[in-house]
Length: 205
Length: 205
Image (cartoon, rainbow over the protein chains, first blue to last red):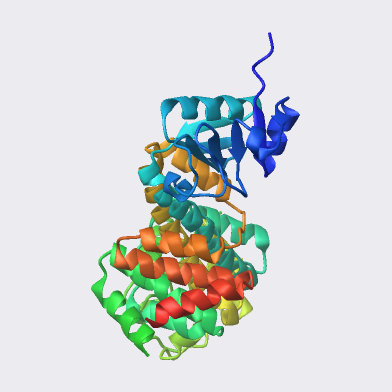
């Protein structure tokens, strides 16, 4: 027995994957499901988006059956749907492409996006640290060891003297700025008022 | 045959470890080596520091035989010494306590400190991301998977709309500030002028 084939329109990678899984690509007016639509969607059609962040972003479409989907890890997707039927349809489709879904409430989707962005930024910071350590130690493997030693450890900022000194040793104004802000945030989290004030003073200059 | 015993004065963990390894703790005036001295050091004595950053920080002492030592990873220490004999003495002593040393030029020590601080800060950022992801997904293990997916990947910042939206979704002013700075630095690295300008504008407000 074959799984039921849907009539799908739209664009994007999910569409291509669903076509590869045997679904039928049709014009938008004939579609049961439109993914990332470029035109109107009418009542009775399902609209799905891999670009929108929340269901509210799909308010312009004249249908109540909506879902948004975003990648969490390889082939794992955060799914938010307007109702249970739409959620089931979306989940079945993702499963057919070899993926799986995790349901996320609409109210959490902006937080999820923010968390993913900040996770990516933590890598930007790690990259800066790695570049400095590799240059200072002349040994990328050892630099990597030092990075790994720090992983998962929340260390408080050093004392003001050390922070000031590290700050002064930085030549690039961009890196100086980042350093001060990270120092300030770290000091806030560790309630080190002295370093926080130092950072605020530098930022005010 | 026993290794030669040194007469050592000073304070700190290294001193205690050296005592445990069989060296003799004496008054500073009788010492061959003084670690983290609190008083004067005269010519002919070796001065070592686990607190100073560079050899120049030991300029106040009347001896040319100096070394500084800082921890890189568990039992691995960055060593900088004024001369080869002092370096050898320091290395032998560290080895006796079960550690090993990596020689670092004096000119690189501030960069090393900075790199270690920024490595620690990258964990502060990762921690913020992890907290957001855990809250959004309601699942610490999945949040951890998303964090690991980001590890080692330098992803460019999203588009201005996504960045703006994530920014507006943040309630805490402290986290807002960190977010903008990280976005700006990321945009600089990826040469995304539009996002850079957005961040500069927000920071100027």
